[in-house]
Image 1 (cartoon, rainbow, N blue to C red):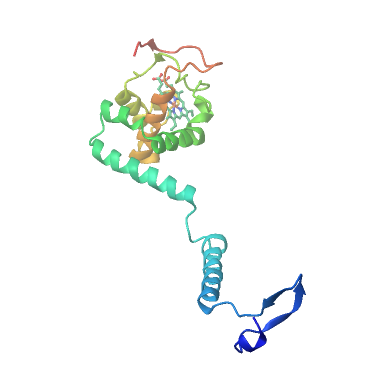
Image 2: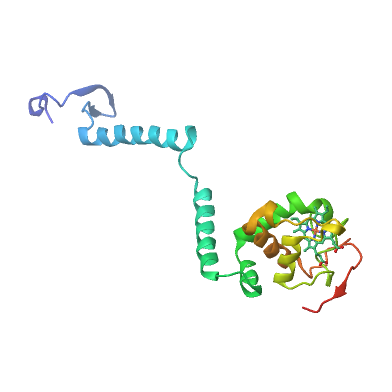
Length: 189
Ligand code: HEC
């Protein structure tokens, strides 16, 4: 190309390598706008997720979805019975909530793994007050006050009590090592 073919915008840059010259053209406007918009977006993104933390992480989204699903299933379960309490043991978030409450509130007497201390071992097949889901629920609700086991119904409320029952059903008959000696009657279920 000779300099006569060039328009005003076709300015050649000063350098030359092996006879190759380069134009000094501006980047197209539309392309620059995609850059500016991307920069603006990234600032907004950073403020939303990293500075204000008003956006949920994918982990938090997942936890919420699991919880919503559990609540939907729990609603469908209907009134509390042996069957619905057993169904609850399949809901990850409810069992996890029961475990967390157990470690916080019950572990001082039953130890964190349920092996027993002041209170009986909840992981063996011996039970003082029955081992069906509804019997376990009743013991937690009403306690055995004269023996040092408080009534938890009004302290914890119905949801946490059912979470605790669900958790205890998952550790029942797991016979954790170092558990307390048997108390009560043996049950085969
Ligand atoms: C201050 C000590 C103490 C705390 C705290 C405690 N328990 Fe107990 N728990 C006991 C004792 C003692 C017994 C045995 C009562 C008896 O001898 O009849 C018992 C019995 C039980 C039983 C019946 C076991 C069986 O063999 O029938 C269950 C279930 C139970 N506790 C669950 C819980 C849960 C769930 C919590 C927490 C919300 C809890 N306990 C907190 C002391 C405690």
